[in-house]
Image 1 (cartoon, rainbow, N blue to C red):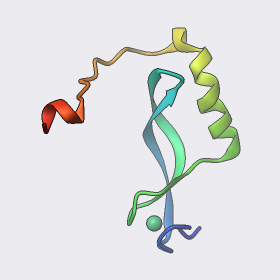
Image 2: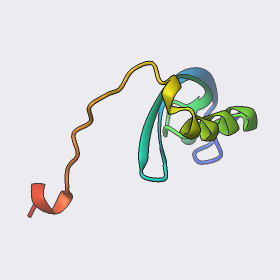
Image 3: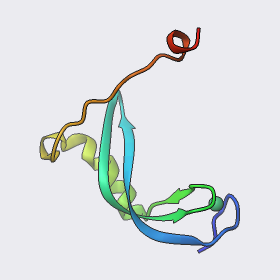
Image 4: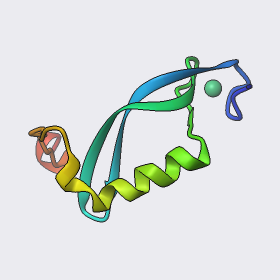
Length: 78
Ligand SMILES: [Zn+2]
């Protein structure tokens, strides 16, 4: 499969995905995706995309919780 953005060959990988659902930030590891090593474009199969969206309602199944630093661009680079 060729990348729609840059035309490079894409490869199938399992990657970590961070996604926002509403105001919640979730990280999902080992997600099957087709990835362009050249520009970083990611493509998910429709079934995988649906599963990712469904995870927002399944927070109790999370393996662990990460602490994430939050920056405001205006405060860091005034
Ligand atoms: Zn690309």
